[in-house]
Length: 197
Length: 197
DNA sequence: CTCCTTAACTAGACAGTGTCAAGTTAGAGT
DNA sequence: ACTCTAACTTGACACTGTCTAGTTAAGGAG
Image (cartoon, rainbow over all chains, first blue to last red; front, side, top):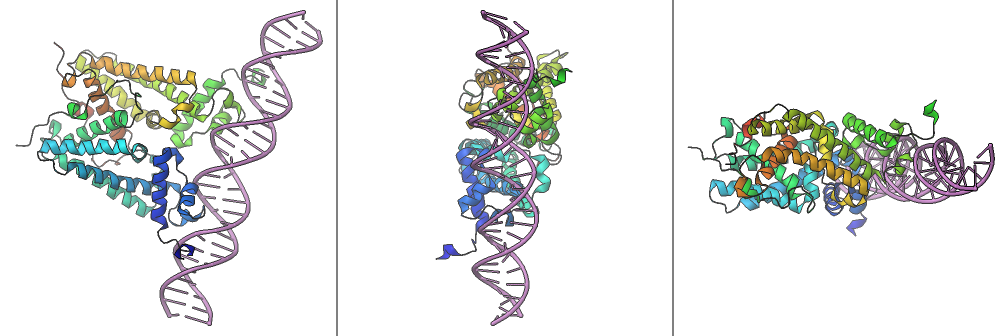
């Protein structure tokens, strides 16, 4: 049978999928190279041929997560008519992903600065492409509005900060884990932006 | 000399201080029980008598960080006259801490949900007290304003989400690490809240 | 002063982690 | 049929957190 092949064939993708499963099951701390390898049915050192270390595997998982993230936002956007409805829908998608994939969401937005240098160049490119696409989604939803403070990117910065902070503090927090009892709906705290004339 | 004493005397505090030093030097990943112990001049198993595991040590470090955090906000608030100036000052303190203690800030706001059960009861109490105090600082600055969307806690939720998201995305990010070239000043994206009548 | 109890700390071991070096095996190209 | 290369395995190493069993110091009771 083909499973006996020495060649796995799609090990790289299998490792990423295994990593996502592990993180969703047991939080970001549950991820380990060896467990990913075991779950993919290969030896503990096999991943080294596809990622130059666990940092790159993590980056690849982040890239994959950003793809799912963008997908979620696009799904929520579909069918929203007015600019306001579209912006709100994008934000709801943002929050829905954070709620549905708590561990992944938290993991994606770790600054993780000092490790960036270790990431494989192709993995890094992939990561930047997918995270850029996610932001693009948000930027497009902000485009119809008059820039906040008359500054290019002002609305994007405001909305992104607001929805990201809300997601971090209220959407991914354990129930009752915030000082604010029941936080208001996001729609109620998103300011009313005037349309461009 | 007293250093030869078997008894350290202030090991608990020394371990927390060592942990903070390690994190500020090498990021959240640089923290380890054994390195903390070594830095405090004790054996690798000594911390077990003060913390029931690394999770509780981490929680204690978070508690200490929240104390510094609150301190920073209070310092920035001093001398601010109008309600608007005070709210802005609190936010600037929030952001100043995030910039000055990048690793600590990121570490403090990890949801870390599934580990919460392992935290020592007294450490947990300490953590809740100090993080509660930090939020209190922000809540007081929001108090003079008309509640957003007429909802109790509405303004707090908006401001906290906004400043936290801004801190995460723009203050702690590596230079040039955000899709928005140069983000606007926080003062420009903080909405104008009407005062209570 | 002596004994005893208790808390603080040490020493050693264990399983698990990421990474490296060396071998092996499969599949494609000539 | 031969070789070459990439994919994978095996084994080792240092490091991690945690557990168990000693050891040592400090303080109280007789």
